[in-house]
Image (cartoon, rainbow, N blue to C red; front, side):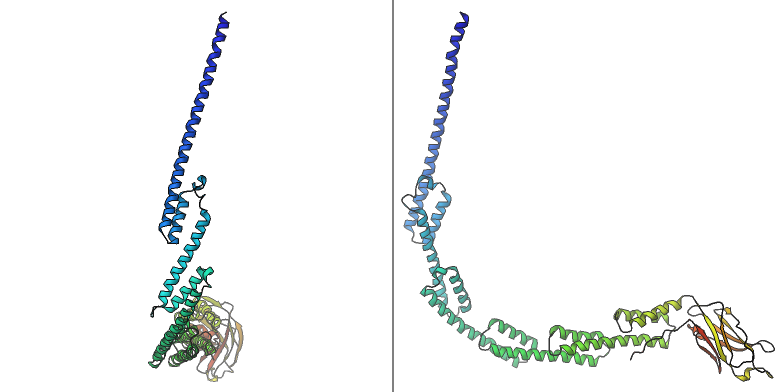
Length: 450
């Protein structure tokens, strides 16, 4: 009995809960629907108010440009106006398109009227007005064939041509006056270039071009003459001479005297090369022992003429200078001699001669003895190589061994002679007496300049 009562009481409780949930859902749906309806009403009212204001603005204004902007603003700020069918009495797109055409026509007429007023001003810039007319035609091609625009274009073209004629004549007169006043050729040339840029096609264009050609020819002649005169006046200012001719080529690369200028540059380079090498050669021939000064001149030549005609000779000279300033060993051969007969002893059939060398205090030899000869042939190579450096003195003693030894000839290098080694590389003289040597010490053989 207790179980039956409990089951019977449970059913009505669950049914009540279900009914309560259904009622709550219905209330929510009704509240949401009411909110949506309220929002739609607000949007409709907002769009309707915007539409009415745009329509009233159009009714009160005749300017299609302003009306078009107002309707475009309405469309931008009321994107939901189509949802409520507010344009059912007015085909909005067609109406706005029509407004756009009217506004474009209004803008065209406004600009046309402004251009027409500008054309009536006597001192206005006809060329600028002509350019504005072309801009207007390009901006409104659908109206370019209109009679008003074409008539205005014809008027502006005539005014422009007349104004250009007057201006070109004024510019031409100024050019002639400048020419008569002796204005510099470069300024006259600038005037002609400006005239041809501003007034191309004018009736004076041909004459101005001829004058420009004449100015260029005179300017070329002046520039090349300046280079010629400077080169003749200052023949040893090689760098400045070269700059004069190069300046001409920079200004007139294809000028009438371009070949002459290019040839002059080559000649200047060759003269400069010979001049600087002549200084090196003369210094060496006059004072070959002044090695420091010689090296300085050689370095200066190499800097100025790295590809010069005498670059190889100068390089060899520098190498020789380095070699002689450091101690070196040289092969020396005593070849022959020539001696006066009066030097021989009384009752002698001829001297018995040998040769000894002394270099920087070190003795080499003596050589073999050639008997009874005034023209001995030794052909004797000193077994020890001769050690010598720049500035070392050299002494040659010829000894006669007939009866007893005596020095018959004594040859000494001069005081302060830095290249005394030359005595052992050729003929060494003492009066009429000669001793001839052969050596691997050599002096540079510099090329001739001419």
